[in-house]
Amino acid sequence: MIAQLLRRLRAHPGLVVLALVTAVAVAGAATVFVRQYQPDRALDDAASRAAVSAATDGTVALLSYAPDTLDRDFTSAKERLTGDFLAYYSQFTQQIVAPAAKEKSVRTTAAVVRAAVADLREDSAIVLVFINQTTVSKDKPDPAVTASSVRVTLTDVDGDWRISAFDPV
Image (cartoon, rainbow, N blue to C red; front, side, top):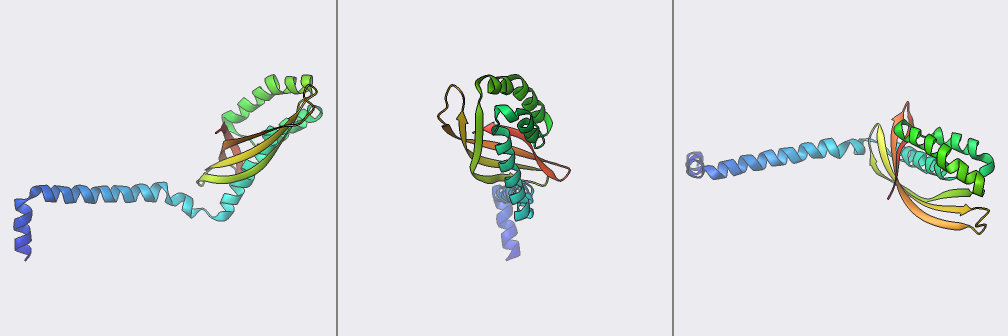
């Protein structure tokens, strides 16, 4: 029986090549699965909740401010940021947001409606956050409510999740 199988395989070398290519493809797919998708399964629900909490609290801090508490509001937000995004936010709030908020008495309050982890790793996470933001100003005293969503990228900094990117979706 084995001799007959070997004769058939010699007669059809294409089948041998096809079998080898299939085996390599399956092994490659298994490797990708283990490396790409298993790390986030190894993290527990507590890590997921911590990432969502950091993204939620950070989003509210970033998008909520009032003209009479700007310095405190911006300081609170900056404590939740890291890297290039911290530098960008610092410059943006100082040059754009603060002057406009003071001049037009802009007050904005953000509320997170829903948030969920899109990707979770040991040292980074991506959380999708849905927000309702209410804004009033001296020019428009009636509250304007805006719904939006952002992709919040978090980086682990000494055991704390910090926002490293904040991208509207």
